Image (tube, rainbow, N blue to C red):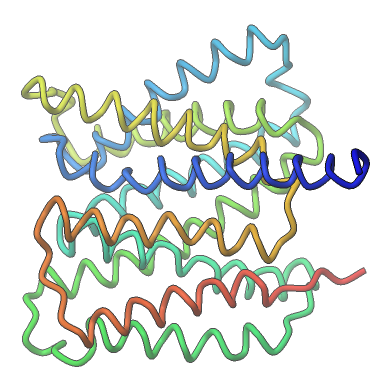
Length: 297
């Protein structure tokens, strides 16, 4: 009985960690909305504060950050794509709200699958073939039925959200490449620092003010860094390798689902029955998309 119970306890503990991490990260767009700073600057502070905490933890753990030129260049590329992703996503939040912005960003599942098939020779199964039209249909129910009635900013926000999902794909691919020569923790720490560097350059290039105007903004930015960038991802990475893919895909859906819920509860987003059906359809498609990739031997 003990031998049978131990793996179950390990999976349960890992599942709870990933669930906790997904719940914490679901507040990301809420923190961005509450911070009265420029979009790219909000992302910059998330990475600077979060990267500082991760750097301290990395030094305490005694892990090496740099493991050769190849590892550094791949992490640098990952940081660039993450910086572009956050720059686009933060603007998307301003235009369409935290709930829809997070849902759009999670469409990265389909871009990652396509990139895996093209560059990594991964096989795609029937689940992905079903998920793609289902995701498009769900998105159409949310924003397509009344597209002509939306403002230009709202339409721009939808496009930016999908572009952010595409950029996040580049981040994941380069991060995966860099992990071949380093530990997950050290890789995430270095990628966070590189992302902060690029975000600082982007903000300066756009002449955005780095000033934080009030206490609420400081609290929101600090929470954004600690809750989303550090605690959330530490929980997910500590449990992600100990649970099966089907359960992982389902648990990670908590993030966009709860983000949509927070948008309704905290910011009073109006949701019609048709939009609700579209959101459920899109979420289920994202879940199928995570199950639709089978690595080629």
